[in-house]
Amino acid sequence: MTLRWAWDWWIVALVALVLLAICVHGLLRARSSDEGTQWSWVRRTGMVLCVVVVGMAPAIPAEETEVGTNADVFFVVDRTGSMAAEDYEDAQPRLAGVRADMAEIVESMPGARFSIVAFDSQATRELPLTSDARAVGTWVDTLRQEVTYYSGGSSIDRPRQSLTEALARAEESSPGNVRLVFVLSDGENTAGDTSQQQLPGAWSDSAPYIDGGAVLGYGTADGGQMRSYDGTERTGPGTTAPYIIDDSTGEPAISTIDEANLRTVAEELGVGYEHRTQPGGLDQLVAGIDVEAIARVDGRQNVDVYRDVWWPAMYVLVALLAWEAFELARRMRATFDTEATRRAALAARAGSGGRGGPGAGGGAAGGPRASGGRS
Image (cartoon, rainbow, N blue to C red; front, side, top):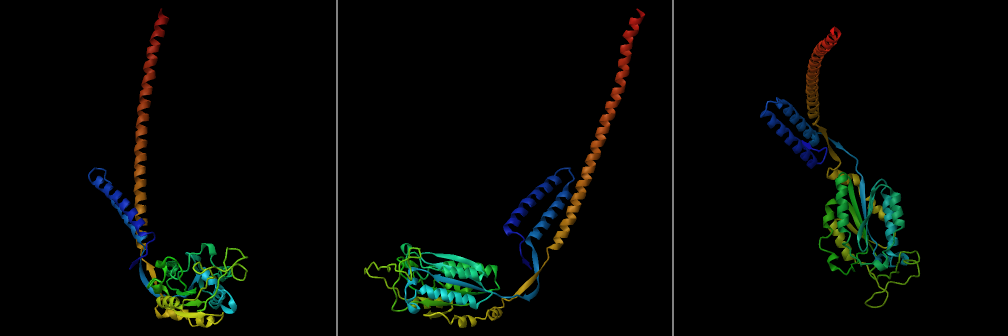
C-alpha cells in the first residue's frame, strides 16, 4: 500500500490535530457533565478520522502497464566572448557552428521536448522544456555572443548547477522520459575567479539524470580573433568592429579551444566528445540514440497503476454525516416543541388574567355611578 496524499501531508496533519483536539475536549467535557452528548463527540471524532483517511489517499498496486517514452533534450550553450572567435569553417565565428548544430539536432528529433541553458558571465535557463521546435529555432536564430563590456571571462563549469536543477525537475515531472544533454562550448577557462574553473567532478552531479548526449567542441588549436560586440547589429562577427584586445599584450586577443576541458566534462557526464569544424553529420549521432531501447533497459516504461482504497472511508463519512444531520434535526424539533409549549403557557396565563380584570373593574366603576343616581 502507498499513500498518495490528496493534499500536502503537513496540511492533513495540521487539520487533523486541530479537529481531533476539539473532539477530545468535547468528549471529556461531556463525560464529566450530564449533557448526554458523549455519542455526539464520538461520532464527530469518527468523521475527522474519515477525512484524514481520504486526505492520505491510500492505494494499492493493481497492475503494471507500459507507457510511451519521450526524449527531453537539454542544450547547454556557451555564448561567452570567446565563442565569437573566427576559426570555425571559412573563418566564421564559433557560434555559427553552434547555431547549425542545434538546428540539426532539433530537426533530427521530431516530437522531443527541448530546453536551453545558456552561460556567459552567468548561467540562465533560457527556455523551459517545450515541444515547440519553432521556439527553439527562434532562440537559435537570435543567438549572439555576450556584450563585450559586461564579459566576466569564460568558465566551463558555470552552468553545471543550473543544468542539474533542470534535469532533476524534469525527472520528477516526467520520470519515464529519456534525458539527453548536448554541451556546446570551446572549453576555454579565462575567468578571473579560478574557483569556478574546472572543479574536479563538477559535472558529476548531473550524470545520474542523463541517458545520452554529447559534448561538442568548437574552435582550433591555432585559435582566432574576436570582434567586440555592444549589443547592436553594427558590431560583432561579420562587421568592421574592432577586435577584442588582450590587455597583457596590447594586441588582438586570441582564443583557442581547450579540448582537455571538454573531454573532462564529457567523461563526468558519461557522454561522448566530438570536435566540430563544419556543419552536418549530427543526424548519425542522434540516430544512434534509441529512446525506446534506453527506457526499456531500466524498465521505466513499466509503470504501476494503483487502485484507490480510500472510498470505504468516504461511505462511512457519509453515514456519520447523515447521523449527525438526523440528531441535529431531532434536537431542533425538540427545541421548537419546548418553545411552542412555553409560549402557549404564557399566552394562557396572560388570557386568564385579562378576563378577571375587566369584570372587577366594571363593578367598581358601577358603584359610584349607582350611588350618584340615588342622590
